[in-house]
Length: 231
Image (cartoon, rainbow, N blue to C red):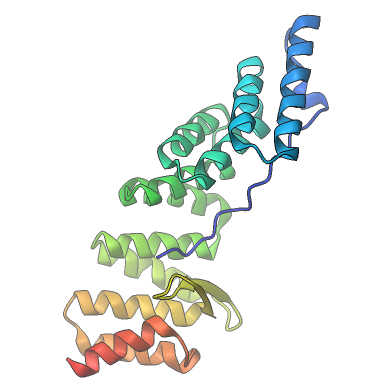
């Protein structure tokens, strides 16, 4: 169940000072220009294979090109090559420590690889820099999935102090589509799911009911409450 939608795939390579080679070489400059031209042409014709080739050529010529590193990581991620996107993200992070884009790439990649403990590690680093409520919710949800309930509840408590009544979050429905709900309702729902796992059914019912008071059409909470009532 996804809580954070990955950023839109956008390739932007800066042709100014960021793309100036360290070596003052006409040959290298020409090769760099050719790689950029190849990249531009591949984008025009929507050719992902050639785009990847162009990005590799750019990075061979200039390993510190942050735009190329980001674009390559996004290309791998959006083609579901999560191992590769994680590895590029780690290289990106090594060259640019604490870069939030790199942290998000790595966290999302690990999550899709079902390496939730590793995903949490990088989401936590991202949270410390961004103070983003969606990121903290994702951490809490992954902790719940790993049965780290006390940690999840603690992070949901932090969210309780941060959220406003109008805050929203998009959650996945059973058919795979997204449903935008009250963020506070999402927190109640996750508390309810944790309570179910802990055998606290009455507490779970209260949390699911509170979620539905805020969002009467909240599918996940409604199904969870119905299941408890039938049980």
